[in-house]
Structures are given as structure tokens and as C-alpha cells.
Image (tube, rainbow, N blue to C red):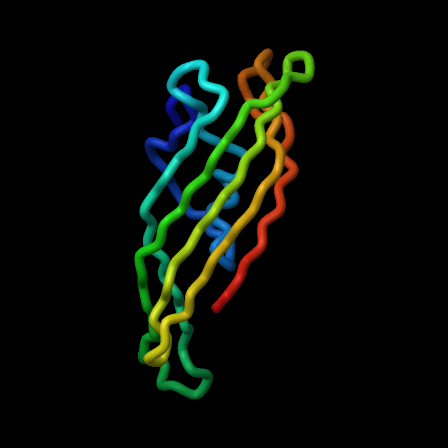
Amino acid sequence: MTSRGAVQTLSGESQLPLLLGNLSLLIFEPLPQNAERKWSEQHGISVTQDGGRPAFAPPFVPGQKSSAAGSEEATYSHDKDEGPLAVINKSVRFSSSIPSGGVNDRYEITGNGTWKFNRQIGMPETMDFKQKLLEH
């Protein structure tokens, strides 16, 4: 990781279901380049839906997979301090459409919460965050 919290390399996998991301990366958030009070991060992403293999399919028949592009945006605002803790509000929005049986299933995740970063130890201290997953 860089000193700003950006992942440079990742070994292994800890992918959570339902578009939640990697468990091993949930506590890390990017910090701004300068001493900014507000910043945002935007990313294009690829979402793969693994439909699995039908229960009575021959053993070597692969399951159906579909992939689609999506976008993710996170906004941050450093509104106050609590002693050595920088209290940062975070909001996210994720959206993607995955083709499924001739229909596009649209997924959207919205969320917000508070992230507290401990300046003395240079690490996150707590995160209280809620997200809502909608399928259209």
C-alpha cells in the first residue's frame, strides 16, 4: 500500500458475496494528496456474476458466467477531530448492469458512514458504515 492508502499489489483473495468487496481491504480508505477537507475517488470496475453449475449437469460442464462494467464513487469529508482522531464522513455509490437471460439486472449500492483515522498510530481506528443493495 502507498502512504495514502492505495493498494499497489494484492496477493490471495478474500472476496465477499453481494458486491461487498475484499474483506482484507475493508478497513483501508484512500487519503487525499494534500491536506484537503473534501475529496473523492472514482473507479471503473468489472463485475462478474457466477451463475454456478446446474445441479444435474454432467461433471465437466462449466457454470454460466456473465460480466459487466460498472462504476464506483466514494466521497469523503473531514469535518471534525476528536483528539488524535480525524473523523471522516464517507458516502459511496456503485452501479452496474449484468446481462442475465436476455435481461439486464441493474445493481446499485449506496451507503454512508463515519470513519475515524488515528493520526498517532497512522491507522484506521473505527468505521461505522451502512450500505443498501438494490437490484432492479
